[in-house]
Length: 169
Image (tube, rainbow, N blue to C red):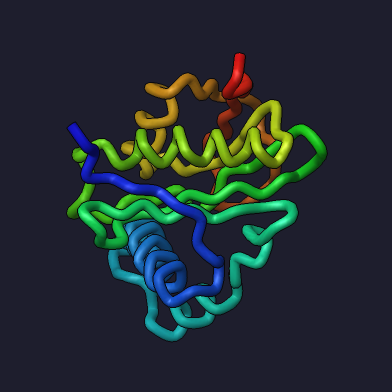
């Protein structure tokens, strides 16, 4: 049986990548503001912050952005950027809310881990927040272990790492 999911590299600055980045940022920003301040993100702030993170670090040679499509429709992203010769950092791991529960997160993680290995990563790391419970559960299910902080991002509350096994091992 063929999977309804396909995953392929996508230029970080393509229209599809930009639309998924906006959807991702809007969701996580609105969730934070609703939880902490009782309102969604100010539209001017949203525009400013989406534009501020171009995603250029997800371009070759030190990074890659993948787009997952469900039955051909863009449904999610996952990127990796190399932080040193053997460490990749996962970025923009996201599946549209209406596509969740269909296996897309697992497909994306497998593909982004493979892409990280292709860039030379022996391990991957990431950070996330308390309120992103679904993400933390996904990472735990896929062998990510919570670790001490590896950055000082003001919104990071949980840090994870995973040692990668070579594709040909």
